[in-house]
Image (cartoon, rainbow, N blue to C red; front, side):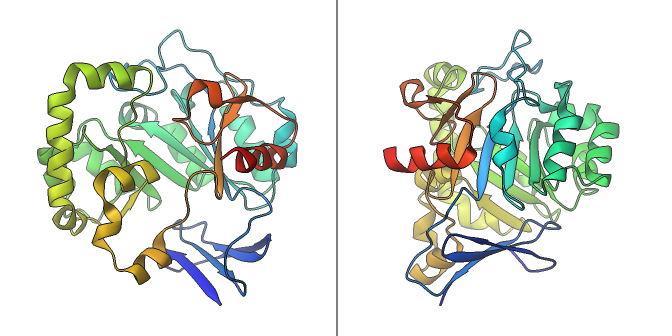
Length: 306
């Protein structure tokens, strides 16, 4: 029997996906896969990364989505594929500023009615400004995972994050500074390290600030083992795994146990603003396809083209 595990056990929802069983903890984000066969073959995507808005008033210079104050919201209540989602499938909602979408709450209720596990990512600015909304989403179990994109690790920010057991601070390889990591370290926090995405404004900022970005990436790679020790949980997206050489820090057994698959193997990306889907959010614009009426059909198309 093959087992694949991420994080720690607590409370589980269990479902069958293709030739394997998924156990997912809606309280702390843990997920395991088990099969009696030689590999995991999903019938449908475990997780869909969904962009619901291109509006954002933050103006991050390295934003790979290129979100602005003139950005549009996606039509998130009337897309047919939503009705094809499976119980306990995960939907990771991002933007832009997801908290600004006027249909966010009814959309989350729609997902909840379908037993879809919704997670959102927000900028630190909006996390701090919209605490009433964030608390409502958590208290009413409209979201389970809460990702927060770091801007400034102030004492107030760290204190607020500690109030949310499922909060994960998102940092970017090449943007994270040594002093930011030091300030966050030792606070029993969870972080997700994202790879630097050279797309839209991310590409322009890389050209403008590449010396600093490269220097920070080298620092993070050289000091990664020590940095990991300062956090309760440290995780990575696949882009960061490649950029930082994370596999070299693990034994073959640990890699087999903790690595959760390549992009499009168990996941894919939907842009509800542009009404497109693709392998991931960094896919070339000519490798994005018009939305279909079924999430499963879209996942199958991505797997055929990978």
